[in-house]
Figure 1 (cartoon, rainbow, N blue to C red):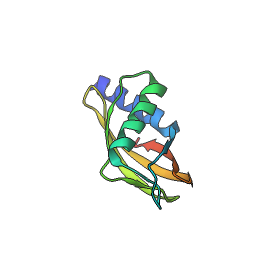
Figure 2 (figure 1 turned 45 degrees about the vertical axis):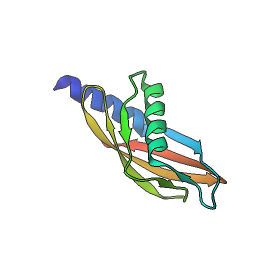
Figure 3 (figure 1 turned 90 degrees about the vertical axis):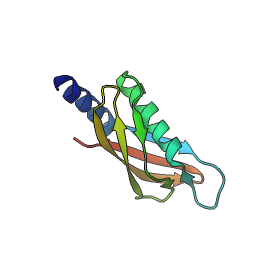
Figure 4 (figure 1 turned 45 degrees about the horizontal axis):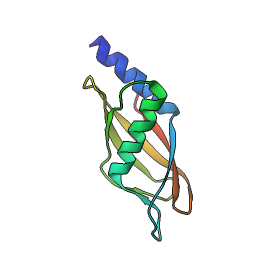
Length: 104
């Protein structure tokens, strides 16, 4: 149990400070597909923590509108999981900038 708690805390601390940006395909409204979003969030968290890339799944595409949020689920290699909120902070054409915050 201690290992699980430690892993969850590590991911939570890393995700609280994480931010990301990704270019999306051409369309009238920027949108980030849920699979790309989950993969990008996982890569950023792994890079920040030096831990293995977690599994991050998101239930929906992220619309490129400031203030839009979605909830994703992070599952670490030891099986612990955390909710992760992804919030659009700005949009510049097809580029969606977002913040990432894990549950405590």
